[in-house]
Amino acid sequence: MKSNSQGKSRPRSIFICQQCGKESPKWLGRCPDCQVWNSFVETRVTSARAGVRTRCSGNSLQELCQVEGADFPRFDLGFSEVDRVLGGGLVPGSLVLVGGEPGIGKSTLLLQISAKLAESNKVVAYISGEESANQIKLRSARLGIGGKGIYFLSEPDLAAVLECLEGLSPGLAVIDSIQTMYLEDVAGTPGSISQVRECTWRLERWAKQNNVPLLITGHVTKEGAIAGPGTLEHIVDVVLYFEGEPFSSYRMLRSAKNRFGSTNEVGIFEMGDRGLAQVDNPSQVFLSSYKEGAIGSVVVPTLEGSRPLLIEIQALTTPNSFTPPRRIANGVDFNRLLLIIAVLTKRAGLKLYNHDIIVNVTGGLRVNEPAIDLGIASAIASSFLDSKPIAGLVALGEVGLNGELRGISRVERRIAEVVRLGFSSCLTPELPPGIKSEIKDSLRAADIRLIEASSVGEALRLGLTRETRAKDAAGRSRDSR
Ligand code: TYD
Ligand code: MG
Figure (cartoon, rainbow, N blue to C red):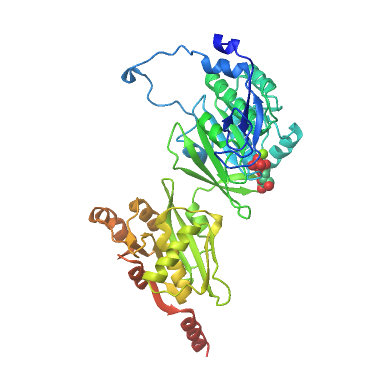
C-alpha cells in the first residue's frame, strides 16, 4: 500500500553507513557519526518500506488504568539460567537477539534450547543460513539430541523462511544467523546493514502478528557490537550477549536490553564435550583452585546481576628499573587498575612506580564493578610487600582518590555468599548501623569476623599479616633441621 505522496515521488537512492546505519542523501567518504572510512553504500528506498512507514495500524488511545493484563504470559526454555536472564521465561511474540563472537557457542545454545522445548511437546523450527542439515545432524548427535519435534530448514531467503514458518506455526522459531538472511526486494548483500535491518524488522512484525517467539543469533564486530548496532538493537525486544574468553570453557549470557525484565541478570554456562551445561554453583567453581593464604591472592564477593559470586583476584608485582613499568589487567578495567595503583602509591606509601604489575581474575571472568577495588588493592599490596592476607579473608569496597573506602551496594547478599562458602574474615568499608544489625546474626552464626576500615592504608594494615614468604621459608628450613 502506498500513500499518495509516496506513490507520486520517483524511487530514490540513499546512502547508508554499513557500520552504524547513518543515512545520507549523498555519498560520504567518512561517516560523521562513527568515523569509519568508506562505509557508505548506495541503497534504493523500496516502496515496501515507504508503505510501512505511512501505514495506520488502527490502534486507538486507551486510558492506562483500563488496560488489562499487567503481566506477560511466559514459558520456560528448560534452562533456568536462560529463563532468569530473560526475566522469568520467554514471552510469546518476542524477538530475542543472541549476539556473540563466532565460535562462542550461540548455535549450540539455541539447538539445546530447541531440544528442551521439543521434549516438552512444543514444535520448534530451526532455520539456518549457515549450516546444512548434515552439519546440524552431526552437532545434534554430539549433543545427544534425537531431533523429534525440531523442524530444520537450511535457507537464507527470508521470504521463503517466513512462508515455511506460516505453514508450520511453531511454538518457537530459531534463526541462525541474522547476517546470513536476505530479502530479494532489498538492496545490498546479506549481512549489509540494509539487509540486516530489513530482515530483523520483518521478523519482528512476523513474531508479533503470529505471537510466536523468535530467537535470532547475530555475530558481533571486532569492537564487540552486533553489526548494525544503532538500528538492530532498537528493533528487537531483547538483546543478549553470549561471552567468554577463548581459553576458558566458561560462558556468560548477559542481557543488554530487555523489554520484559531487568538487564542485570547473568547466566553462567560451561562448554563441555556434550555442549553447554548450566553452572549452578559458580562461586565454588571459580574458587576451585584457590589456595588460602597465597601471597597476592584475594577473594572478593562480587555481584553478577542480583546473584553474588565469589571470585579470586591475583596480582603479581615485579621490579623493573630498565623500561617504563608495565601494567596488565586481565578481567578488570585497565583504567580502574591505574587508579588503584596511583592511590596505593600516593596514599598508602607503596613505591610501585618501578614495578611491573599484573592483575588477573581467575576463571576468565570479567568484572567491572567498583566493589572489587579493595580486593585489587589488597592483592597488589600483598604481592608487593610479600605479605600473606590473613586467614580466610574476603575483601570488598570501592577505593576513592583520597584513599578513603566507600560503601557498596547489597552488602547483605554478598555476605550471605561469604557465609555459605565458609570464609572467616570479611574486610569492608565502615558499614551503616542498619546494615550491620541486619548481618550481625548471620556473621555470628557462621563465626565470621567483620573488619571495618575507613581507608586503604588501614585496610591493608588489618587485612595483611606480617608473615612474609621469606619468613615462611626460614621457618620451614628451621623445621626441617
Ligand atoms: P557454535 O555453537 O558453532 O558457535 P557459534 O554459533 O557461536 O559460532 O560453537 C562452536 C564451538 O563450540 C566450537 O569451537 C566447538 C565447541 N563445542 C564444544 O566444545 N562442545 C560441543 O558439544 C559443541 C557442539 C561445540
Ligand atoms: Mg553458529
